[in-house]
Structures are given as structure tokens and as C-alpha cells.
Image 1 (cartoon, one colour):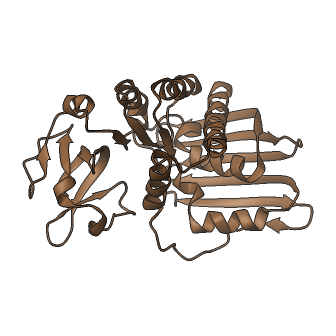
Image 2 (cartoon, helix red, strand yellow; image 1 turned 90 degrees about the vertical axis):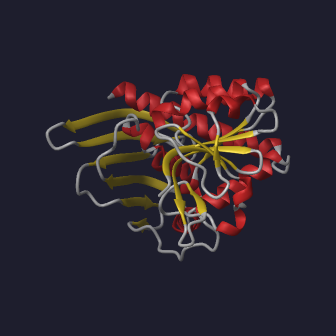
Image 3 (cartoon, helix red, strand yellow; image 1 turned 135 degrees about the horizontal axis):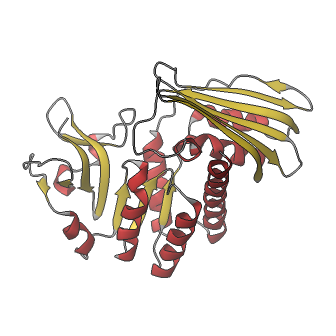
Length: 301
């Protein structure tokens, strides 16, 4: 591993990433998470520049360090990729939008709804793209689940997520776990929050958030976000329909293209003007709706 939390340029784009790795030959490779290493053929080393926030980084095979200020002020840098702790997303997005740069940020965009609306308005004012990565909608198992759900009439359902204890800086569970909320909105449409509770045990560093939701047809959904040391990372579903019950996420083979690369291709299509205004608006509406729901859940807790 070369460094943590670095700015990386990739053909006129800066990437504020969590980790930069070298491959077996010692060549720098960019990753967003450990699970998704980009193929070196798609990342010319000659196009990489890095400015590290937490530590110094010497030049590595022509990969040199520059300052964040230079990244913001350089005219031939057009795009910023932001992949840091959730708590710092808002400030980083605002910095680059104000400089007239396009931004791609991992979810959640912000840790409150009001700030997200402000940033969307700022992007529109500046005439740039603000893209929120939601790879959970691109997984093969989710695509299969969506096919299973399509055409069925929901009666009630539960989505229960478990995972390890959250690290500092990731925010309230309704925001850090917004990928699960996005699943529910994408599957069942616009939702409202009727109740929410939060159980915490500081002694064991564990927590359990339970949110009660309603669909537009007044069907009940329960979302549980449970975290603690040793808990397996898993999503458990119980969706009751008029015709059947789904209690397992359908298994699916891993896709040929990595999740983050799929998202990068979609973002690139936006930059190239290949995504319709209608689709852009639908995506923006979904992102803001989920953040508004998360905000309401936090208030009720």
C-alpha cells in the first residue's frame, strides 16, 4: 500500500480516495475499496498525480505529489472524485463545485438533507455534474432481486442489515446505511417515515436502528440497521407479496465489469451529455428523497 486518503488525477480528474495500492510489479493502481481494484490497463501511470492529506508521498514511478489548492485552481482539472469518510463529503463537494469542477462522490452525499439540496442547487448554478455513486443498485444480486419483485404487489416487508461496528466519521446509521434505504425506494417507490428508534450500547460499541416506513399504497416496510463487533455483513429480507414471499436475496454470479467501473462509465456518460435530462432528474429526485428520509429517521431517533 502506498498511502491512505489521497488525491489522484486521472486524465484531468482528481480522486480523493481511501487507498492507493501497487500491483505485484510495483505499479500504482487505484482502488476505491479493497473489493474493487481497477485494471491497470485502464489507468495509465503517466496520467496519475497524487496529493496525500495524511502523510507525505514521494514520487513513485513518475507519480508526483501536488497540493489540494493546486487541484482546485488548475484550469485543466475538470473533475473531482471524492471517496473519504462521510463526514467530510459536504465540504469537499462544496470546494470543488465552487471552483466549477464536476464531482463524483460516494454515498451518502451529505449527512443532512438541507446540505444536499444546497449542493445540488450549487451544481446547477455552476452548470456542472454532481454525481452520487450508488453501486448497491449495480450489483448482480440486486438486479436479480429487482426482477423477482417486478410486477408483484407488496403487502409488507423487512430489510435487516448487519455489519461490523462503524468507524468514526461515518455518521448516523440512516445515512451511513443509505444504500439499504436506496434499495427500498428503488424497489417500492416513494416512502414516508412513521416511526424510528435507536438502541446503542457504548460498552460493546454496538447499535440497532429500526425505522418504520410506508409506501404510497400504505404498505408497511421495516428497515433495521444493526452493527457491532463480530456481526457478519449480511442483508436479510422478508418481503410478503400478494402472490408469494421472498425470504432470500437471489444468488447471482459476479458481473464481468466491476461495480465502481460501471458507476464510472455512467458518470462519464453524464459528462459526455449522453444521459437524458429526464433520467438525470429521476436520479436526483431519488437521491434527495433518500436523504430526506434519512434526515427524518435521525430526527425521530
